[in-house]
Length: 114
Image (cartoon, rainbow, N blue to C red):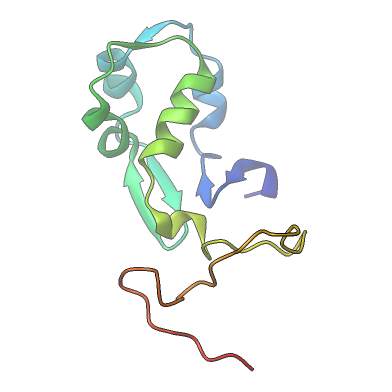
């Protein structure tokens, strides 16, 4: 697996080339019949393409980009990794970033500052 095949914690490397080379537009039923059992790795979890796309009930996809976007829309937060994490930029002037596990995030415990 390369970094190029993983986006937002989702690894499409096993099925990416096949999906890119399909003749679009393609009906969802046809797409899932052919590739529905393909596993999509999402960090520590995985799901089949069918499990991700079937709930959307789309008639068809016009391009690989539409399929990829649909997959990204359906993955959970666990695939993304640490919420609000960026090692690239500090907060902008006036920007208030919520720490992961901060008091305003449901289901998260407070983190101790050091």
